[in-house]
Image (cartoon, rainbow, N blue to C red; front, side):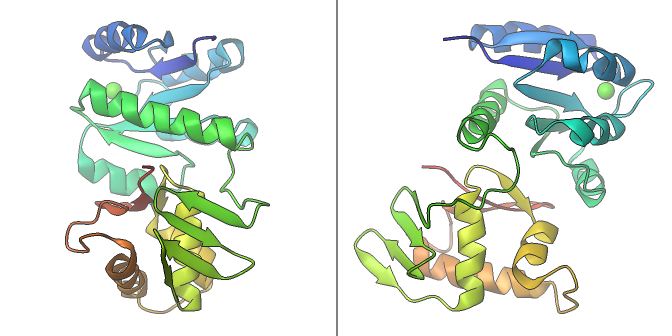
Length: 234
Ligand code: CA
């Protein structure tokens, strides 16, 4: 099996060293750029399977690098922020990243996220939000069939109102990937939606009461603070 290439774009030497050692040990091939301009110059040559992109970079910012890459490539991009408050800003800019981590992160968590993104792209080579041609999706115990408008959890069949069904469909189809509140609202209620943004939370709460083992501590539909929601791959 060939090693996936991770393009680490990071200007702090201590992080670069740790990532080179840690990711190599996990079986990845690591290429490094230490500023945004270098990242863009070398992107085609490196031809990465995933980009790990620091937000605060010399010369060209991580946000601009992400936007530029997105003009030509659907490669998975995980953005790295120094503070969790930066995540809100970056997400608000809708730069097109697939996931976000905050420094300091644990290597184990980072590797799990990298693998999740690589699995996703292995199945969805376009990198776009997935709308599978196959009408049935199954993630762990939960399955959903669009044509039959049917959701089952284990052996139990659920009856879901349309919007709850659509929210769940989008989450399941993109399992393992963080969907921002804006994306979910856009896709389910339409980009011209002017209602209360709490509507989404209400739908998530209802969904959790139906599909979670313990709705008080959800393990399927998880909240990514300041960002949105993610359906956990099981
Ligand atoms: Ca930096």
